Image (cartoon, rainbow, N blue to C red; front, side, top):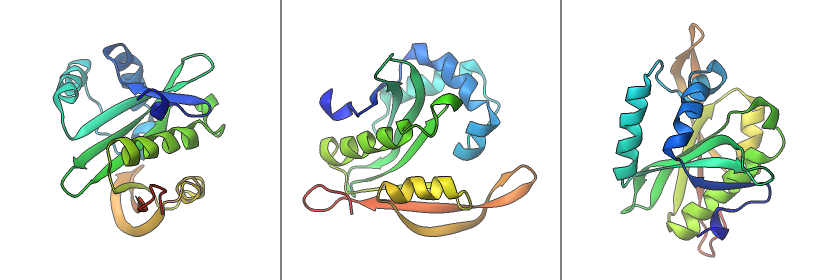
Length: 179
């Protein structure tokens, strides 16, 4: 399974208890929680309970994104609402370290996550949501092969205003290549 979780400049591994303090700090930063829709604040005790539940979960996987060059944990990816009957799941991704954004780490992590979901978990469709009006995010998902499937109008409340969210989806071809 290691090779399926290895990218060009990153690799994915299971989120570990040692990652929780760092992830707690990231998820309490506005540049992260506003994009992910995380309910803050949450306590370390709440995060520990979430992590214990994660270890038992059959419908959620959270992986740490690590740089190959130095093993630095720079973000997380996840699959949740995994539906094995219908073979679909929702994905989430964030690169937390500002200095690592825009350098291909997120794109590489997304490619590895897609390969894992389609080839190892044998899922058929993945979906996610993002800010609808952020051109960088739109390009990110379009370059990865996602199609915009719709807009959730005024779906989330950020910075004193309701914002639209875009829904993205990608479907696996019969030959394994996403369409």
